[in-house]
Length: 198
Length: 430
View 1 (spheres, each protein chain N blue to C red):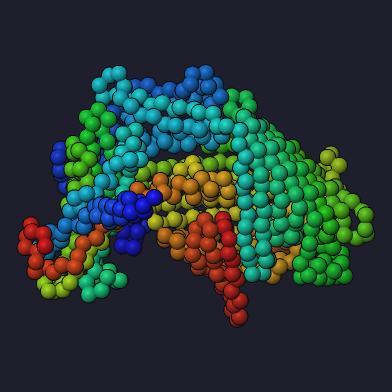
View 2: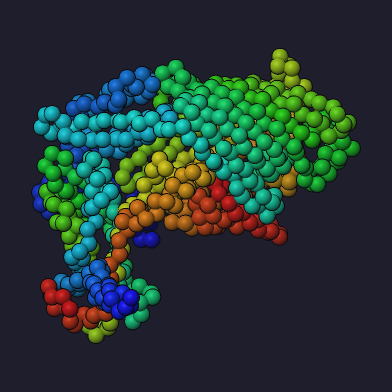
């Protein structure tokens, strides 16, 4: 039996596999307003899955946003900004409310999920005063759900519960969606005209 | 870090909630924190139910009253979640799922606590695991078999941290939970321990025999210790639990060989545990008072009274955890060595060795501790004073730094003049 049909099918599958688009997170889109940088994360869906489920059960969810700016090297952050946003879902009006924790306190309501996510990023300014216009800059956004002491905590005052530890290890993959990271760069400040992305 | 310091300094957070599409507020509208944290706090609870019906009676009156009091109140997600936690604690045989949905009337919500019976299960718990550079390893494991309201446990332990002795052996227990409308639990425990004694303690016993006959009669060491402990615990009202029982010990004394003594004590304790939790922070207060009396009525060879009061306050916000705790205890009469107080282990006076503080244990102690951690970095300050056999009281202090809250390590230093030998501790829950 000739082997060429098998080889042909194999090569075709391999080529198709290599050519298939790999889904990768889109980078952050920075924009400059006066002496502050803001970011957009077009494909970032924070209110989704378990968090959306929790919100739609009437609970509040706190998310920590952390934006770091790197200049010169990508190892040591030169500037950082952070904020804790508290989300809740209006069970009757079916829209989201978000509020910040630090002063000056801000809150916004009657938003859909995407608007609420965008509102948080719009309230996470990064000062760029003192940075060179020609410096290479990278940005990294990290979002993390605030720690919640669930009933399934494996290490408690009673000791280490091996059954719960095994459950927790088994759920590591399920917990991953509660952390997100997006990056941008390198770019230069001079390329960021107000309201423009590089 | 700046945010953490802000949280620490500001102490309380009352966030403003702005109606409308977007509103920044320097001023704070009237309302509580919950109003800001959860938009649903403007709605009223229409109904609060336990599902499936018929399980309500298992909750007991105090909790049921809290559930029934919800309708008509403004919805408070933190309070409702706290109530669900209380139900979980009271009914460990059930999984409690909290569901919040729209009510039949506009602007009202329906709260449902759904109870799902857990299957019969087995848990393996490691209650203690630590290494201490002066005390070596402490390790134990318990297997718990749960069948409905009944729990049967068996375990093994070797511990040189809690008492003046190293005790190693096995223990068994049986417990029935949620009797009497969920308020009463009772059970019994059997423990079989073999003891080992530190040479410093043995030398102190020998020294006492020679120089202090009064003390010598109080500090006899034993080879084995067998305990039988039946108990009953009643939840008086939600945060307060009362427990009473008998702790019957049979001791095989070191010398002369084959001599046994009984240390039988009746005990009673009151325990208070209160938690406050919101989406931003959690506070917990525990307080405990225990009174034991060794009496000839129970056939005890050791006649004594032992009081122990402890309290701890925990404040957790974001990455900051602050724990302040205090302990005071005193003994009157002749108590066995396992009842004597210990300072200088992995939870008290962490920079000191317990055999240096009081080689035969103490009969009066006072101890306070402040434990702060930011993320996983931890700093602890301990101060304690103890007295043994009418001797002098001496205040001792220590500081410790380390990494890891649940599981981690500490390096502790005694605060004293002269040489300071650090003590290294590794493990969990100290």
